[in-house]
Image (tube, rainbow, N blue to C red; front, side, top):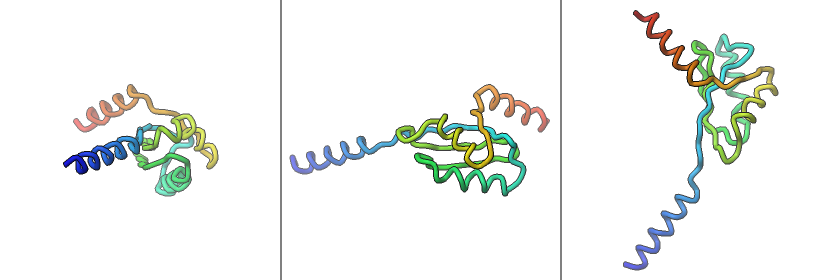
Length: 109
């Protein structure tokens, strides 16, 4: 029984110590994305940046959502990396997201 408890405790400690701090940042680009080629260019270049775990683009909302390991990179470094392939990026704040959602719901009525 002691052996099983010790084994379980060691496994739990290993899982907790290996946990990563995954965060999300939403940015908009200049020039704006207007086609699938733009999306592929952004995804293809960002995937090589250190700490990037996932990339989602949305042409309609003009946003790029990046999931990243906060232990390996920062939002500032990610936004600076857009310059390597001809874009500039800025973080979309929460107020802008809320306004876009309100505008979409108003246009649906």
